Every structure is written in structure tokens, then in C-alpha cells.
Image (cartoon, rainbow, N blue to C red; front, side, top):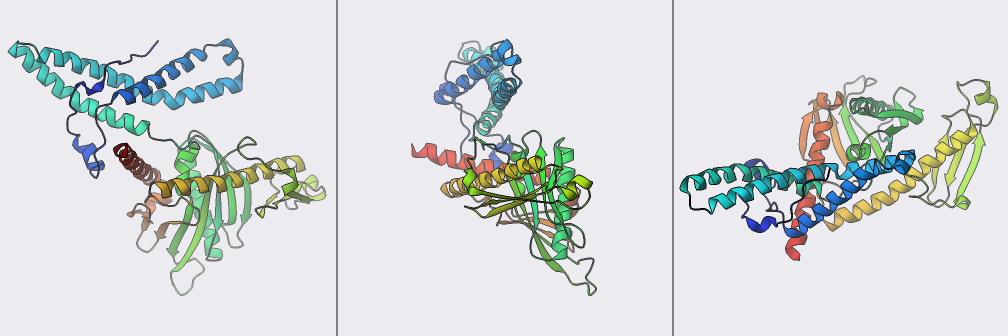
Length: 397
């Protein structure tokens, strides 16, 4: 069914003051106003596209093509929430305008009833206007992608390896709690436990949109199990979150690849130990080297190595774009780069400090993989900066 559309301008009424919850969150700037004609025209266009995609779901040609059906469903899902919120806004707007007509009449009793109705509707409309503005902010094109999550031990020797293993445990719990799937595609165990490096292939709904905020340097301050004097050591681990990509996103010249094969060794049967199934791949322009021994065939290891290389190359380009965008709008959220120190975990004080937010969280909260509130705070801060940038751009026009 076609969704209700509004054609009259929302400028017909003066917007009320922001509800306290919204005003407190965006106290530094005034943004949320009645939707203007340009905004409504954009929303109506989004609604028409959404309705067209809904109709395509019943097209036999679409139903018969699994890939096309998946794409149509994905495109439709991206605009579903904003369409639903806009529909709700339009219903309230019609009710408000109906009440306004009554208010302009001569019947004193009806005027009072209309005034009360308008006063009740206005805060609801204001909340929806705020929500619509958030939903229309520029989206990260990678947010819906699956990711490769790489944890690499930094300074600190064996303790850094153990800390990398602790981070892996946390992310596995978080991944499971979100209903995502994860598999280890590369790992190098530490001599005393943990990992020198480990890479997960994570698949699910909007994985990158959440895990991307975990990218950077994580620092731990605690007494290692091997420390006999009880001294606190500082160790680090670096987390890289690389969006999944394919040949369309990254072009690799075969001449830039140098590949060697070797025996995998270790457990896995005679085939693994006697046949050269492992792959050692070098990308000459960047010096990126990837060794794959996970699969039991050379072909699968080569495919996996290429997949990991494409993700790393795409991540490099993606990081450049994000840095430029953050510099353009003077972002305070953080550089988003893997060299940025994002958190410190202090065992003595049972404290997890996020340096981008300037906030402390209970260490137990992080260790129990309850990192949703931290990630949501990062998303809210990023949205606030985008809103501020949008306000400044609008004011400059």
C-alpha cells in the first residue's frame, strides 16, 4: 500500500521549543526545526523509491534471482526506518493542521480544545523531526559490510600476547551476543598463551557500523601472572577492523603479487604435511605479506590470502578517506586510525578509560563484553559532530 505523503509545507507553524532530552544533548547548537519544503521533497522521494522497491519484491524476475532479491531487500531496508518515521510525522502534521483550523474559528470552547491538542502534538512532532534529521545524516557506505577483525599484540612481550587473547575473548562474546558469526581465518599463538596475532572473519547485520569503533591501540596496565615482584606492567594490542570487499572495490594487478607455496605442517593429516598447501603471498607495492595455512588445499588458502589482501588494501584507502573527512569537519571523535590509542584498561582501579569519549567505564563491564554502551556513546558523539557540521554548512548557504 502506498504510504501517506504530505504535500503542504511544514513552515505553516512555528516550531515549539525542544523537549529537554533533545535540548540537553544538542545544547551547543540549534538545529531541529520544522521540516522545510526541501527536506519534505527529499523525504517524499525516498518514500517513492521505497514503495518501488516494495513492489519489486513481488516481481517474478527478482524472486527468481537470489542475488538480485538480496540486493533489493538490502536497498529497501536502508530506507525503511526513515520512511516509517516520516509517515508517522505526516499523520501528526495533518492532525496539527486540523487542530489549527479549529483554533482559528470563533467558538471559544473549540479554540481551547484545539489549543490543547496542538500543545500535545507539538512535542511529538519535534521528537520525530529530530529523529528524521539523524536518519538523514550521511551514512558510512561500509556500515552494512562484514569485517575482518585483526588483533595484533604490541609492546609488552608475552603479556601483550595474553592481552590480545583477552581482547579476542571479549569480541567473541560480543559477536555472539549480537547474533553474528565469526571464524578464525589466521592465527599465531603466543609462546606463553594468547596470540601474537589473530584474525576473525565476522559476518552479520551491520557488523562494521559497530565494530569499527574498536579499531586502534588498546593499552592494559596490570600485574602479569609471570611477575614475581608484583610490579604493574603496561602492554598494548592493536585492533584493526577491515570492511569486507571484493574485486569491484579493489583492483589488484597480478604482476604486483609474488606467491610461494610451502607445507603447512602441524595437525591436519598426511595431506597437510606432505603437500604444499600453505600460501605465502607478497603484495610488492605495499610490502603487505600474508601467510595462509588454515585451509587444507592450496587453492582455498590462495583464495583466503587474496581475500585478506583485498581487505587490507581497501582498509588503507578507507582510512585515508575517513581521515580527510574527519579533518574537513574538525572531528573530535578520533582519527579512526589503527595507531590511535583509544582505551586504557587499568586492573588496579578496575577501570576502562575511553580516551575519545573522555569517560571511564567499569572494567568488569568490558570484560563481560558489555561494550554496547561504549559503542553507542561513540555513535552518538559522531552523530552530534555531523549535526554540528550540517548546521554550519546550512548557515553558510
